[in-house]
Image: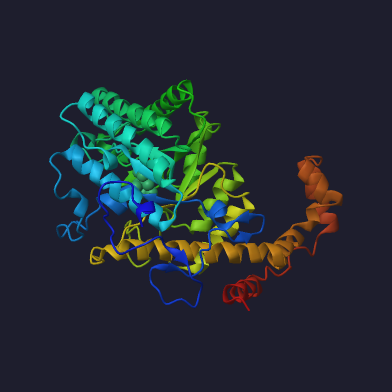
Length: 448
Ligand code: XUL
Ligand code: CO
């Protein structure tokens, strides 16, 4: 046990390193499908999936919702003599949890890990002190930083936005925070840095200069990128789309919107997409649609792995539990070539009545198992080959003859129109076979 906690106190006593026990196990604290070292295709499961634990949901969220106060006990906040000491205890709990779980990565916002001070300078000092400790604990627990970010949405001063705030002073304060979070990410060897524009949107067009705000956002992102590169940061920058909540309309609405924005402002060389399943749903898209859209633009980066509740319209951030969703998502990810700097970050929280300490483990185990199954099914789709072969054949009329000339840009529009009328009067009646393909996928899902 001593191997798995790095602080002075054990916060999850009685829970040892989580092991793979296989599908027949009835131990809730064991993996049924996630077998880290198992090879799937050319890589081990752990290298395909690159799981990360989200600090904010797992160690900060306490079950508070708009209708009720905290329900989830956080023993690490007890007995601390100062906010900084409480942050250190929380950090001990976090590294104990992540290493017992066997996730290789974690993600954080500046304010998750270190308390805000009375002044910006004090906040920076707090963050630097915590980062120094995190560096040692990451090493001891063998945990790496997938990405860091800044929380420029909780503090009331961001009520009118951060980078898109109509007041220059707030834009500058946001920069101060983002700069410190970038420094922390670099210091901790982070493989990415994420921007989720919590307050970057508008509540009413009557008080908003939309054009100016979008230009400010682009300028801010470009300046932050230049600063990080100057400091030697080699990782990826991610934009995490979300259509609404907290604002009525967020500028990073969905993947397609972000791609257009990045290209318009020349940011597409450094920035990629961090796609969240629940945000896809809020935008009216399938998770796999968002992944394929990013991949098609060469901008797929990372994933916030969670799910929404289809019967309500907000960001419930639940743990993934649908094999269908993880299989179609993993298929999109494998087709995109898999993760490089990114991974599967559980931006998910236990329900507010999941109050046993073991529930935090059980929820992550379920999410990891669900993605492990999704990965195996996605690999089966590829290995069996029926679905990819069907898609290839569906577009085969572009492989030769006039179709190939069209693809190469060798036909004028007049040529194309003439070929249509002369040769293809009866074209268009080929079945799309959706139901057949859905049946094939269901066969893979059952593993028969
Ligand atoms: C909010 C959300 C954030 C980002 C990071 O909906 O998803 O937690 O992932 O700021
Ligand atoms: Co997220």
